[in-house]
Amino acid sequence: MQKLGQHFLTDKQALEEIASLLELEKNDFIIEVGPGHGELTEQILNNESGIKNNGIIIIAIEKDEQLAGFLKKKFESNNSVEIICGDALKLLPSIIHNSSFAIHGYKLIGNIPYYITGKLLRTLGDLENKPAVSVLTIQKEVAERICAHAKKNGCNKESDDMNPTHNKFMCGMNRLAASVQFWAEPEIAMILPKSVFNPPPEVDSATIVLRPVPARKTKSSSYYKMVRAIFSQPRKTILNNLSGGLGIAKKEAGAKLSEAGIEPGLRPQNLSLENIFKLASLFKE
Image (cartoon, rainbow, N blue to C red; front, side, top):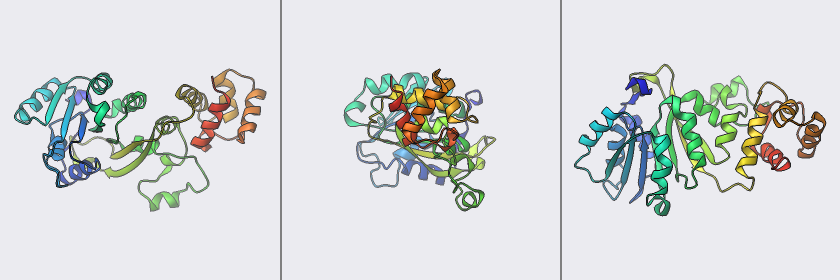
C-alpha cells in the first residue's frame, strides 16, 4: 500500500469536516478517488446532514487490488456504493462520459496520494463535464501553491503569521496556480497535521475545495501556451520568458507587454490571472 504513496486519514472529526465540504444533497452522485479502507466513504454515507441513505450514490476508484477487494467485501451489501479497481487518472474520463453524471452532475472527493496530484488536476481541468465541487486532501505546500495570487507588497511575514493558510507560498503567482485557476476557484478549507494519518506522512496536508468557474473567453490552448512561456524560468523577467518561450524578438515581446500594460521587468510571480489572459489574447494562435 505504501508503494502507492497512501496515508490513511483516520481522525473522526477530520473525516466529518471533509465530508461536510461536499454539501451533500438528496440523490448526489459522488466519485471518490483512493478510498483506502473506506473511512471517508462511510462518513459520506452516514453524514450528519439529515439525508442519511437518501439516494446518495458513491463510485469509489481504488488502484490497489488488495484494498479494492477489501472494499468490495466491506460494502457488498450496500447498493449505494460501487467499487472500481483501477487507475483514476485513466478511468475518470470514461466513467464520467459513459454515465448519468453528464445529466445529473456529480461531486468528487479524495485523499490524494501526493505523487498524482498534478496529474489529477490536469485530468480534471481537461474534463468537459467537471465536478460541481472537488474536495481534495493533498500536500499542504501544494495546496498553498494552487491558491497563490500575484505577489504584491502586502505579502510579508506579518500577514503570514496572522493567517495560517496564507504564507509565502501563496504570495506569488506560479505555473500550478495559473493552470488550475483557469478552470476552478480554489480555497484551502482546512489544514491537517501529520498526526491524523496512518502512517503519518513527512509533511502536513490540506483539504482544498475547487469550484469550476464559468467558461473563459480565452481559448485554453492559447492560455496554457502562454502559461508555459511565462513560467518557463520563474526567476527571469517576463520579457525574457516571453521572448525565449515563444521564440520571438525582445522588441516584439516588449511591444505586446506595453500594449497589455505590463512592466517588462516584472517577474512571473507578479502577474495576475487578468494579466495572463491579456497576454494570451494578444498572442492568440
